[in-house]
Length: 222
Image (cartoon, one colour):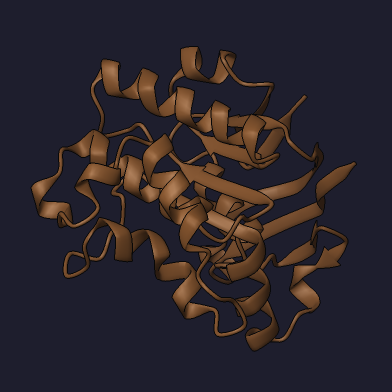
């Protein structure tokens, strides 16, 4: 079953002589449960694509369909709720809240969603699986980079989203921690039936996924 469809998407920034074509006629689909790498050189359009799929930006032209919903047709409030319930984000810089401890950082997406009660046993299970339960009362500043990235992954999983978007999730990590985080992503995809799109510069990491989408100069290379 296809969870994501990107249909003839263009993204243009600026006007007239200042026009920049970030994406040109990009089309592809992703099956539910797949772990897909998005690769390309710097400035090729990888992060732009991830932002469009995540509803953080809108295409100039084309459609992005997630779980049968064209997210470009949703009103702002509808999109915010849809994104919160269906998409998890993992960023290179972790983007944790420094004033919240590990547990509260992980539970944050659920507390934002007034329609959901916090599934405390699930949060506890996540933290235990990721080796964070003993550190649940620590703050981000008290954790290593690898631990912070594991907290970010747990937060992305907290709402049980169908789709996880990871933008260079191992970019700031050493090789040992990179292997660990990749293993956690693959295990999350398998265990929780989540679809993962991971932007990476690392060809070796890309080869360890289920499939690769290559982007150059804003175009998908087939």
